[in-house]
Image: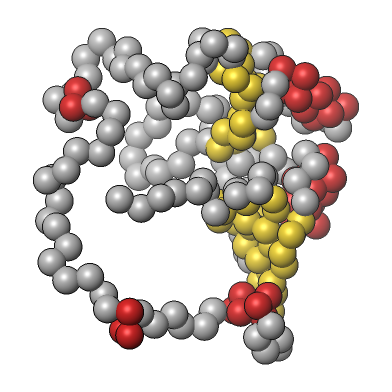
Amino acid sequence: MPSYTGINHLAMATGDMDGTIRFWRDLLGMRLVAGLGGKGYRHYFFEISECDMIAFFEWPDVQKIPEKDHGVPVKGPFAFDHIAFGVEGEDDLWDLKDRLEAAGFWVSEVIDHGFIHSIYTFDPNTIPIEFSSPVAGVDLHRQPRMLDRHPGRIALEGPDPQPGNWPAVERATPGDQRMVFPGEGTVFAGGTESVD
């Protein structure tokens, strides 16, 4: 199995990169660590933690998404509900709540979910976001718990990956055939600067 380090980045979209920078960098305190761009678009990355980022593509015709409350069921094609960011503790949660309210953003009350305490809000693009602080003594990473009253058969197999459910790799890609093709971000590693 692969060894994961976190979410390298979530890729979102905006029609207003300046407003997005003001919110994510200046209000929430996430460093703007990379920016790419060319004719008709920009692609910027904000640091959540040492291993995690959120990125935004700015395209001129992007419109804000309709406001949808966090966790409320919908019908039809749908893939994304909200982003939840972890913070170290309760003080961080209250600091964010105070900052967001002072800036005129709607913020929920602090909600107790048993293993986390959370607040909910929306960014300027109407992206639903949650901030969560851990509850002392409850660590679902170390002690997973299934409390669904009617879990499916596959969920009942447990928290760990179950072998034998997918075809085994019969031939791994040999080292001399592992090719990496250049993308726009090669400029960060000393490649050629992008031009319009």
